[in-house]
Every structure is written in C-alpha cells, then in structure tokens.
Length: 336
Ligand SMILES: [Fe+2]
Image (cartoon, rainbow, N blue to C red; front, side, top):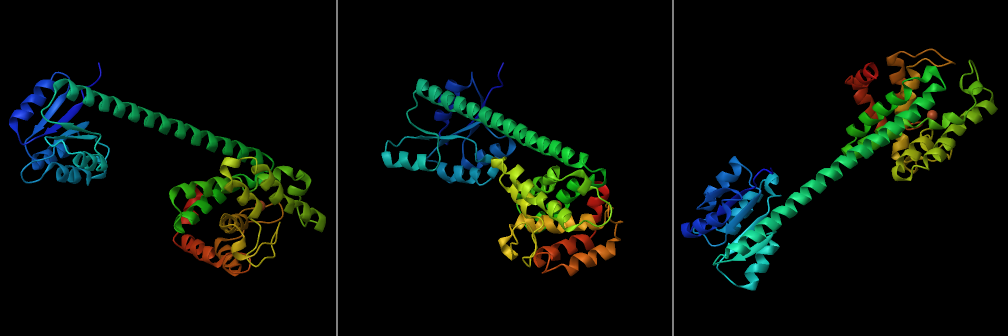
C-alpha cells in the first residue's frame, strides 16, 4: 500500500479545521495548525506533502506564512492551496501569482476539497517520479559517455606502452587547473574529458615514427604534428561534446603564435587548448619518452615558467605553478 500523504492544514477557525479534518482524515496524515507560527514549527519538524492555508488569520496571515515557509529552499517544492472566504477574482489571481497550486473558497464543499487535493498530489507524485527517471537516465548517459571515452583512451595507450597513464594525468592536471581558474563543475568535467582525448590523433601516426628512439627527421616531425588535426577530425564526430575536438586540435598551439596546426596566437587559441598545453608539456617533461629520460621536478618547473608568455598563456602558468608549489600536481601524479 502507498504511504499516506501528509497535509498541513492551517486555519485560525477551529470549526473550519474540524470540517477539513472530517473530510480528509481517513485518507491522509493530517497536521492541524491554528496559526502561522504553529505552521512554521510543524514544517520544520516534518515536511508535509501539501499545505492547505487559510488566507485571513490574525497576526501572521496566510500569504506571510507561506512566504516564510518558502524562505527555506528545501520547502519551495511543497505545493500549497489557499482557503478563503473571499470571492474576489483579484485575490484569486494574487494567490496563483504567489505560486499557489489552487484556491478554494469557503464554505468548504467536501467533495470539491477532496478532488482538488487528490488531483494536486497525483500531479506532484507524477512529477517527482518523472524527475527521478530523468535524473537516472542522465546519470546513465553521462556514465556511458565517460566509459566510451575511456575505451578510446585504451586504444590510444595500446599503441605506445611508454605513454600509459599520460592521458589520465593530463586530464587530471587540466581538471585541477580549470577548477583553480574558477570553472563551474560541469565545465571542469568537460575539461577532464577533453584532456583524456587530447592525443587521440596519434592513432593515425605510424608506430615507427611514434616509437622512434633518437632524433626525428623534419618529415617525421611533420607527420607527428598531424596528430592534432587528425584528433580534431576524429572528435568532430562527437557533436554533442563539441569541446572535445578543440582540445585535440589546439593543444600544440603556442601563445606567441608559433605553434601548430594553425599558428593561432594568444586568446585566439581556445582556452581549453591553452590549459591542456601546460598540463601536457609538464607531464611529458617529467616522464620517460623514447627519445629522453624523465626530467627532475624542479627543472620541469623552471621549464614551464620559461615558456610563460611564449609557449604558454602566462595566466595559466601562474595558476599551474601555484598548484605545483602547493603539492596538488604531485599528489595527482602519485594517485593516477
Ligand atoms: Fe599532443
């Protein structure tokens, strides 16, 4: 059996309370209050599913009581119905404008009261149910998106065992940067996902070049550079997450305009590209590569600082150095 709904009835007239009680008590759990102050206490103790509120009461009137109840955000979803002896259309409009679900005139007609209340509660239940379903679907959708992204990361990293963990670390550094730069949590998630896929274009680069030890020829280096455009092209297919392509495409642009693939300069480079650029280079510096040994942390720090304003956006370098100095970046590295 369904749990009984709780209804808070507020009326200074005890005869009225009695009538309402006779009509509703068989079906609902009732809280009866004879003043606004008492109503506030009831709501604090237990949130009702619906409020039936007399308009005219001595002291705190019905509208004021509702306003006070709704000051608390958690109470804003409680539907309320005003009860009034007035027949004025202005009053009715005023109540509905306040957000009342309905407006019932006294004297109370038991059948009307019953029907209106059950209809509103049914709608509320339906609405809550729908909201829960939407939330569940949204969660599933986000999970699927992230799982698909990780599957692609596995493809990228399967190509080169030395870069294992690079995507996750770059994503995590970029996420920390975005958060420290004041991004909201949704954008922070987007930056994380973009960081994960920044090197997806390496799928299109021959292994011989990718894993070559020692110096690359000019042609080989030219081919490596292609991973940015290739990545941008691959990710352009995921239109609902349009930001992904920007990260892959622009993470090798340089702030002074001498980067690739487009030679964009300063703020022309999408910010996500500028963020990933710092995270990517730092991780590459302190990691082993086919062509080099890992650099120690202090030298890497100086290297990033040296690139401020030429290779990197100085504003982002500043935030990154702060994260580095307070230990956040090192913590991420040990955790991922
Ligand atoms: Fe790259």
